Image (cartoon, rainbow, N blue to C red; front, side):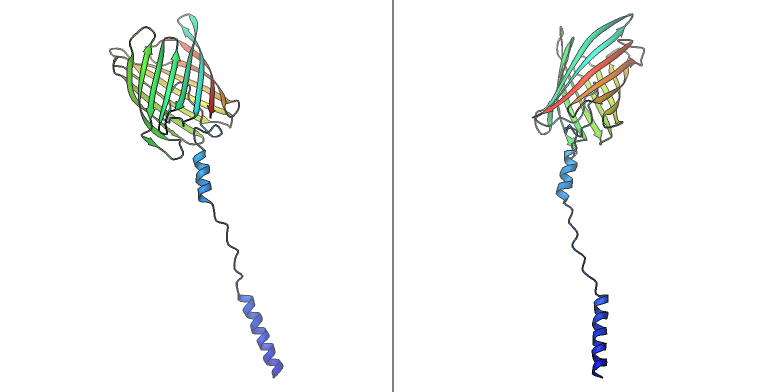
Length: 248
């Protein structure tokens, strides 16, 4: 009898052990702050992740302080039956956390634009920015322009828009750009640019091109611009544009 009782006790103990669940080791907790930091770092001001800038359309997202973008365009323009070569130098940088500076130097004028991000996403890839611009022709008076620019983008696609109104000349200028990241080193760029002067028909052009990544700081842009309205300044224009971005 004693042996039977001992056997029953052993069997019960074994049964209890078989049905007892072994506690799972605690799962490692995801570091949400680290993920958020990585997402925030993938913005347009980061040379590793930024979407390349358009050829001419202003972007609605001001750069961060200490970020400098320089675009130098060589323009071969066909006018009537002859070709002319010109240049356009664009410089952009951040002035404060929400404000930026955009300077354009051309042979016939200089543009100085200040914009401030009224709306801005946390990852730095979407913004709406009112702006004021001073257009300084080489031999004429200053034309003050007001307007706004916006940017909507992700890691593959970017949309940029800008619209100006000339207070002195009573004219409108604007542009829309769409950029697509085809590969890690090639970006497709399309832009619609236009101007409407008082008592004149609109002058609009369509630009298409590629921007090729040389390294994390340098792109080379190749494009062609064609008029799409009867009111036009040229027959065609070919563009070569190095795009350099540096940071402190």
